[in-house]
Length: 598
Image 1 (cartoon, helix red, strand yellow):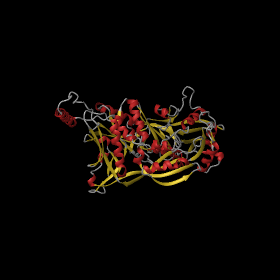
Image 2 (cartoon, rainbow, N blue to C red):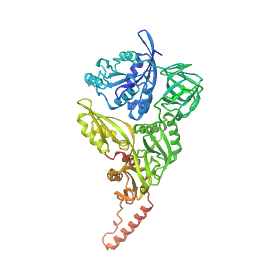
Image 3 (cartoon, helix red, strand yellow):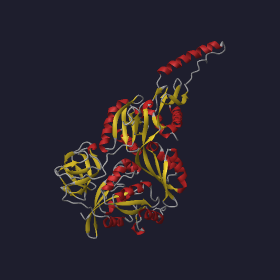
Image 4 (cartoon, rainbow, N blue to C red):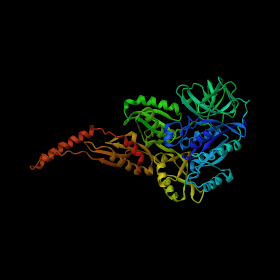
């Protein structure tokens, strides 16, 4: 065990984490020239295109240092705020972390929040200054920022470049010298932490784990504590670029387990694996079920594709256990699913994967969050509202609670005013403001999760010219004054467009929605009124004018009554059309509601 090192990489998006991981694999000889490619650990096309890590990966490297053979386990972590629970489990499986900071961009919000996670788990932090070869890099200033944040010595900060491979040997030496060897007892009952799982279409779910105590052998009966289920370990092994089956994996090491599980839901990240015959008495702390934060309806464009969409969603769920969906129907869109996502990025990824991997074109309704409603009749009973149409009747409603988050924004001092006014407009309350350096400010806000679901991130980037970084974590529910705004087309409510909105903003948003829909819905042969309503009260109205045909063109001269007769006849026809006509809503109209401020 003394020659094993388990470490992860903490970095903000785009600070060069995957590229540096490539260089580590090159210098330890874990990859042959034929297998080499950029961002080797990002296996999805989507990850490569967007330059983000969506799924965390683990890989084992061998390295000879001062004549001794060492085993290095790199547990890669996703960088985005939506996947922060997965990051916390990857961190719990390590003894040390490389803190990578871009020499041109300095420390960002995501880096700090993940750093605090690592410090909570008592990890040894090795600061690495990446991209020092860039012309825009200023290593001295950023080194000072790191020293101030960590309280370490300037000589502890390793200068490196993922592109050229400069400094990689220093990083490997620091990993071996500074990160402690894993502690654990091989003689105790098996206790292993699951930090990830991947679905293999031929072999079922592959579980990635780190053994804390004891050892796991091939064909051993193992038990997953959170689900209480028992399985046979068909195969255990270590993770190189390809899998290497082993007879046994001992305390301190990282490996994979194949038990033939077909459902991704049965393997929960953060769960503890133990021996079924001699179970451990204490599960590893920190396990929680992943809770979806954002809900949206996903409907097939063609109603006949409903079954096909269900099959596609089930296949996606095998790969991604944090996706949750239940069937629902809408009067406007037919049959579809109400899906729960970890955040907006997660939702975009699922939508894109449905289109790419399964050729499904889908309509997504306005995303919203999960509210708690309380009625006067049963003030103690929580009614969970995932869909605006589930909100109880306003006359019997006692109160509605919505989820709040603590947001951390780091930006340049010049943009503090713009960022503050954006957060206050989104009902945020400022709780703290700290100057990290004379140029950079950290702002803390308490704000409703619902407000950041729409366009908050894009607008934050706009008002700060791309210089603000953002991170958040939930802090619980608070009572809010929320109302349901319904959109009526031709006096018919369109359930897919209703939204729960704070009472102070309802009038304004209702007006904007009506104006936007008037631009997007094509004109018909009759007038179409578009109304926004709260309960029975109409708060805004726009009208799409009818396409007119000049019926009086053939009347030239003669008596006015002849013209009037023709116009009256046309008016009756229009009235009858309006009663039987139905209005087609284009897909852009559903998406436009998200971009009301453009």
